[in-house]
Every structure is written in C-alpha cells, then in structure tokens.
Length: 252
Image (cartoon, rainbow, N blue to C red; front, side):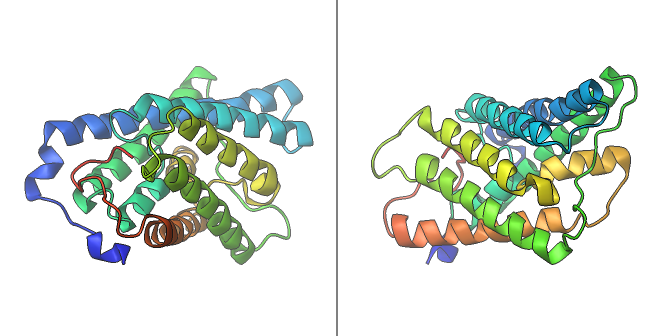
C-alpha cells in the first residue's frame, strides 16, 4: 500500500537549501496563479458592474485560471514539482512522493503566496476587495463538500497520470496543459455552485484579506479528501510497486 511509503523526512530537511528554493518557487507560482485568477474576476466585475455571476463571467474565470495554472505549474516544475496547491502536495504526500517536512514548507509558502497576491491586487486596484469563496443560494455545505472532493479528485488524478507516473516516460509540456484544462473545466462545472476552488491556498488568500471565513472549512476539507483519495487510488492501482522518486525530492 502507498501509505507504507509515507515519510516524515529528516530534521534538517526544512532548512536544506534545495527545500528552501523549492518552497520559494511554490510561493512565486501561487502568487502568479492567484494574481491572475483573482485579478481576472476583479477586472470582470469592474467592466460589467459586478456581473461576474453571468455565464460570461464564469467562462472568463475558467479561462483565466486554466491559463494561469498552466504557466504557474510550468515555471515551478523543474524546481519544486509545480504543485501550486496544498491539495496536490497532500496527494503527493500520501503517495510517498514528498516528505511531511517538505510538504509543510510547501503549504506555508503556498498560503503566503496567495495572501501576498491578494494584498497586491487590493493595493493595485485602489482598495478593491478580493471576493472570498462562498456558497451559492440553495447550495449546502455538504453539496459544496462533494463538489470539492470530486473536482479535486479529478485534478490530482490528472497530476498523477500526467506528471507523477513516469512508467511511460516524461510527457513534458502536456502535464501542465492537462492540469490547467481540468481546473478550467471544473470551474465551468462547479463555479456557479461553490466557486470551484480545488485549492485551499486559493481560498485562503481572499479569506485573510477580506477576513471572511464563512464555510471556509469546506475549501480545505473537500480538496484534501479528494486529493488523498486520488493519490491512494492512482499510486496503488496504476503505479503499484514500480519504482518511486526518492522521498526527499518533489519533482513529479
């Protein structure tokens, strides 16, 4: 089972230069992604007098997040593995592809990147708020939880299939394209219901800057459950006992 490959990591790993460089890469990648994704929503609101709930707004959000994630994953891939998402990091952890020590640093860097991106957006737009994720009318927290679990399962399963599983060789640029596409597609499917986060860091930044925490736990628990299931399923069934990358590294 994949759980037997879970590792805490060496005590000195958190201060190792390679780990710190990887964490910095995650910080920058998340900053790029959140600035583009959240910024596109703010720009659409400005152009349409808060018309982001229209179908056009949903399509715009889907495209901006798909494009932004493609770039964010690509620029971080050779340094940190291009996780750009605490859920992806958790999915890699349960599959034995990253240690707990390294994963915690990634989480901190990812959340800080999101907060800084939202603060920069607030400053650059003259004080406009980055909208926190919230549930639509008649959508319960349990509805949203299922959405987040299923959407994040699809995202992390895609990460494993295109970037983690190297049995058939490195498929290169297809991985970040596929990862961006699945996020864009999921936003089209779930965006009208709960915002389609799939990424706790993306939800965390706007919540901190606006200090709005309504139903925020859904945007952590759902993605982590979905990512954990995807990591265990793909690693056990499709990767199985094939060789793994060393636990000290995070490059998919």
